[in-house]
Length: 76
Length: 76
Image (cartoon, rainbow over all chains, first blue to last red; front, side):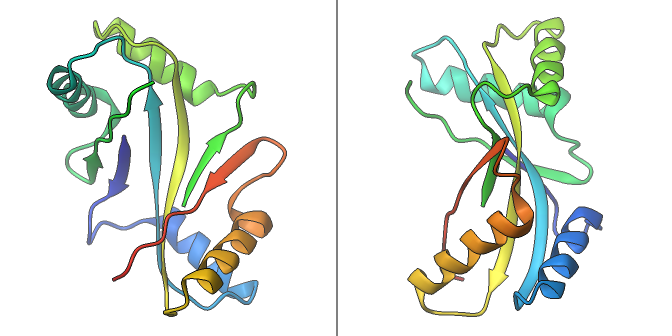
């Protein structure tokens, strides 16, 4: 899943990336930095897997006050 | 773009996520943690944008010794 700082929330990592890229000569607009977490789940039930990953995000992987998350499922 | 630790490279963040999820009762397999960087680029040329982001990854955003990157472009 992808965990990103919500709009309007200060993102110091993103600001650092933005200013470093400009110093290197890349004319970028806003940069935001978040996390990607790849997980292996042993289930064939897509709806159950999504619900489980949602619970993981809420309990551990994302801070709901300042971060939003996006879940992508794929077969392996 | 997405920046992930290469296969075989130690990923302490991923290990911490994995063991925390198991302690919370989620039966997960391997977990890996990387970064997602969202950037605004002012160009309509998809090929040029991709080449530019590749250069950013190589010069700043990813460590090619231990990380791989994946570029996704979208219209805004």
